[in-house]
Length: 474
Image (cartoon, rainbow, N blue to C red):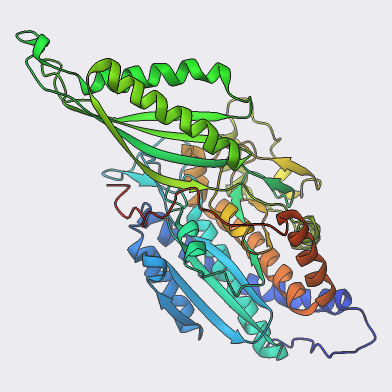
């Protein structure tokens, strides 16, 4: 049985010293569970279920946590695959986030060359199978630590579906699932180990649907009004608008429906838009121009248009008090060390990367602490303005690998990814135990949170009051 050092209030040694003495046993415990964590990661990688359809992935996580003694509340926030798992009692209440949705259109085997898997239509190109497994591994370790030390406090694991364009966490925030949480911890797969205080872009998305009149494209074109013309006119207007928006803005789209046969003028067409900027206020301002362009395109092409907002995320709010603490814990956890097979795999992947920003071998280290802006977006942003939140990345992919690529999908399904998830589990565990024990840290982090958020804060979800779009991946 693992012998955990008991924390006794009022002992002479400072809190950070007692945690440091505990840390070796905590890390050993996580190492002893490597095979279990890897199996969960691989199983969810094979499931590769897209947003709001992660039934098997969610069930696996819930069953594992239930077997460890957590109380499970399933189907929260009107989302069938969302859940809250709770262990312990009292304060503080610390939540660990767990994502598990895959990306559509990504298909890749766990090999270092481009190789599709027959009949597979989605893949874990963002490594959320690892996110789930690493968070699960941490939760089990923290649960055992709470038992062995008799430490007071409540641990929550929030199973958060549909991060990829579905904003699952936003609905969970809106439903009040973070109202009594004191701190939230998260991490993300990546190509480096870093606890940089990194904010993100706020974003909003919608599907714009144009409706026209069908007719024979050659025999009676004068009778037709092309819905595809509406989409193309809209896209042209937006592409002209790019010159006249703040430079941090990102706008991207795909035409999801544009007709079936060239000789039939399409009476329906759809385009799916994303709009991003660091400031949610600017997102809303530019969004009004986007909607105006859609109306103008419909007017000019004799079509009709409506749109459905699919998701919206606020930018991550920094908490440097927590980020600096997690940076320390990540350095205690260490980097990712490749064996000979993994080194060969990594070298093969590295040759396929276009101008990688990191050198092979950097996975062994932790990147210097910094304050950064990421040009991605995440629904963790809404969590971060509801409760003090901190995250980090672990090197689950070959250095230089981009997210949403076949290379990231490949590494997420093999031991390079699993080892990165172990680094994450260790870091989350060390950070959570520090928060459970260190009252001064909790006070300082809360003070920074309140100062950054401001006293007149009012939460407004960028996706409005719409229900979860459970069919957005259909």
